[in-house]
Length: 249
Ligand code: IPE
Ligand code: IPE
Ligand code: MG
Image (cartoon, rainbow, N blue to C red; front, side):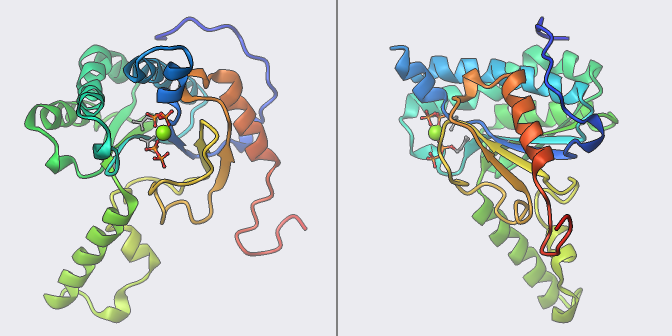
């Protein structure tokens, strides 16, 4: 247990929980600006929210959560903010890796990790190596991630296999293509939650969200908490997932 928490009594059906939840942790900057604080303070608070959400999802026995930490487009931000955001993963890994290990969580990363500076790559590899044999929740951090790039990279892999006669064009199908994406080892995403009131995907998991339930809340990420998470789960449990059929009609 990392944080002390008050008990939250919201009625969720523990037998109908999503297996995999994706989060777009948005609104850190506005949370800080509203308080007259530098945006970086918002990112720090956002980090604390992430720790709490990891802990709660783990307690609920959610199989996987994937969080958007830095997009390929976020390099457009001022250099000092980019620097601060890039230092956060190492800070958290160095402080919380023992707790993550103890909680039996696997730490996984998606994104153009090889393009990141060596010190960050080393910390990421350490976190992955030291947790990869754990059997609990898979926590995937999307860092320097962009879904369009991911799809292009997967396409190149498949095209090369065809060129090298390892694969015929007819053998390409949805399952095969998905196995070439960075999320190849993760279950389908059942629920996607975006905070901060923006109603868009911002180049996040475009392929993987094809049949996910989408949930948007106006709360800024630093204000997202156990109650807000449980509200999203209750809403998820109310949805009728039809997958193109007529289930539940
Ligand atoms: C999300 O918060 C964190 C990152 C994108 C890294 P923002 O920094 O986007 O906060 P807003 O949207 O500007 O409020
Ligand atoms: C998406 O948020 C990326 C992350 C949360 C890391 P942004 O704040 O970058 O998205 P836009 O610019 O509002 O679409
Ligand atoms: Mg934002």
